Length: 67
Figure 1 (tube, rainbow, N blue to C red):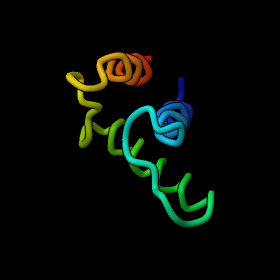
Figure 2: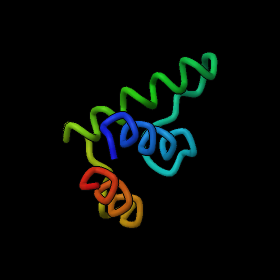
Figure 3: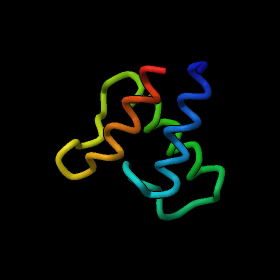
Figure 4: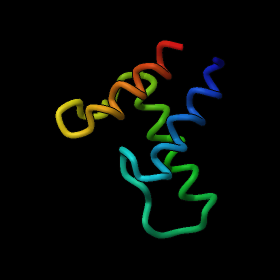
């Protein structure tokens, strides 16, 4: 999976509000951009999905990162 595909997959989870923080106001483009920026930070290891409160999604994101 390419880096772009990984970013997109992680951002989709953020937009679905499975993990991360979805922006509440703004256009859909702005919300998507905010989700992509968070996804990039997750991919780089600056942010993590909390394994204690979101165990399933933590594993899901780790699988995406390792693919």
